[in-house]
Image (cartoon, rainbow, N blue to C red; front, side, top):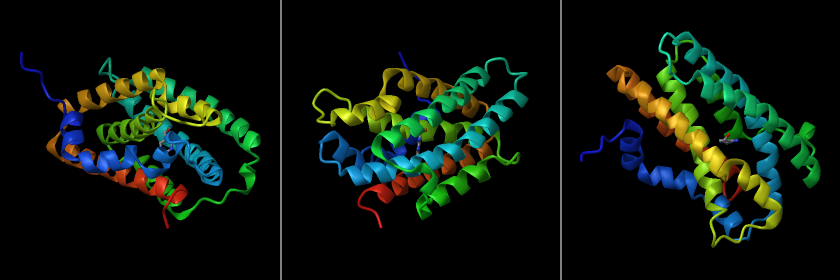
Length: 223
Ligand SMILES: Cc1ncc(CO)c(N)n1
């Protein structure tokens, strides 16, 4: 039987090196090997809190785009709504985790790589950006974290116990299933998209991977 290769599968194969670079970064290896410098972890925590706050209006804009196209019955509105709702809990989790580690969130200044990533997210909220492009970005952003943190939970990993909860937040099976749902929505959109939208979506996918690498670099081994 011949299995159909989806667009996201094609891209993951074509851009394998960059994808692996974003999901197997030295920051993630350091957590997995138990060598993580806690100050690098705290930097990540504070910076990611800022990122997640900027992520909320982006995800809300994806929801709006899905909603507008909702004459198409099964286009992902409910999955994305679940994502919006999970972000509420995520913001609370960041606050709790920050106080556990003594990180003062009100004092955090976004670093350059984070600012640039947040501006990119903001640019994707424009009504000129098609739903197909936005949902691909959303899927890629979530998936990089899923693949990265799941790696820290594998049987042979030496992740410090105090970081396991963080890893489970994105590395759990539940989050993995959510990413798969996003991927299916993205592939379904791509099947019906114009060549122009597909080209833009692929470029956006690559940009996400590059921003993710820069984000990891900012916490670990970057400049
Ligand atoms: C930088 C970054 N990428 C992806 C996610 C997943 O939501 C996150 N929290 N932060």
